[in-house]
Length: 544
Ligand code: ISL
Ligand code: CA
Image (cartoon, rainbow, N blue to C red; front, side, top):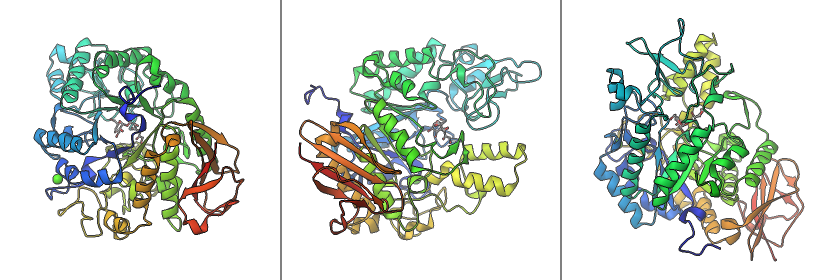
């Protein structure tokens, strides 16, 4: 049994993701910044979070809002200075909040000095990337990009370079030992400054085993050459043994297209790779292979997927939202009559599952998808590229508009609604992206004042989790339940809890397990043992 000194700090942590551009603007230029984050640290402390995952704040031309880094050891002036960043780390530390930085090492920005030198012909730096001659009249292979279109772009010299994301994000060549030295040096630079770990962007695709042609697919041709490769596992093990293990880090990998078995390999404690992984299967529950083509969401499918991952992993990284996904009330809940109930239900579920829960900025007040008027309101480079790809396939405007508006990542990137004023308390200037008009009733100020708000439910639920041995470290077991209702137990030595989640807008008859209902998203006077109200969440204690 681990005692308090050897126990890992993150084992019972609640982590809050900040997308800096949209969080809080301190100087009126319409862009969220580090000063804004510092001004809200007390808010986060009060909410009960232990750590912040900070989406990239490094120098970047911002084509992919910071996921295109041009200098890993400097701060984007839109967000502030290195002094601001150091202040954030130390102020957060004083409040007992750790900072986890996003680390994007599959690719750099095309503005990075390394890539600029490579383009200028410097052989040392050309080998930091994948530059290849074309084949016949086309690219070196047939791979496609995550953002639509080809994964290769031709340079003035006639050669092509590889980019699994946009052409502004050239992939690093992880076969080159110099790349390893440079990036591990960057990791140490930040760990020495006091950050507590990294969220590693698309970490399971960084090592390309070969550049052969890929099996032709509707999307992501070529992935069999770079997904979860042996070389990737070896690299992560080296990061772990040579760098991460020297600090008390928490390392969570964003792992795309993984099965539970892949994820187990990447996060098995004995293999010493990652501490936890983000998987996507539950996010894709309503998509037909690629997210732009949706199918009907069925709660029973979500339940089956969550259950599978709960069983498979020791420490799943649980989440219902991030900066790449639509808002969870739109995705799995209800934005009408049951907006408040469903947001609280999703909170309860996320914080009751086994693993490390992540909350994305604005989720704690039930923010909804954006209310964009048309494609012109969208800033996301992914949406831009997909729109271009759909145009090439001769999709008409009304179809492109519909598919993109309902799935664009910008749905989660509208400014956090702090109050109901014109700038939503986010900015005194012109916001970089449209603020949702529902700030009039979905905002932190109003919800702070309302004891029954979603925000206050989050606070109570986080506190409940903190005080519960069973939720913090108990085991997990699913219990038989009617369709679309999720019931499971969390059990530790002295405590057994039954968690009930009605993921529908209908009343559901259920078997009553346990002894006393002790927590829920309906008032106590409405608790009925034998049925669940629409989107009801409840915790039932059982004597053991
Ligand atoms: O968002 C997606 C689909 O809409 C994913 O395929 C996403 O591109 C993938 O999860 C990788 O995401 C990460 O790396 C990207 C960056 O744009 C994302 O914001 C980041 O989370 C490239 O760095
Ligand atoms: Ca600003």
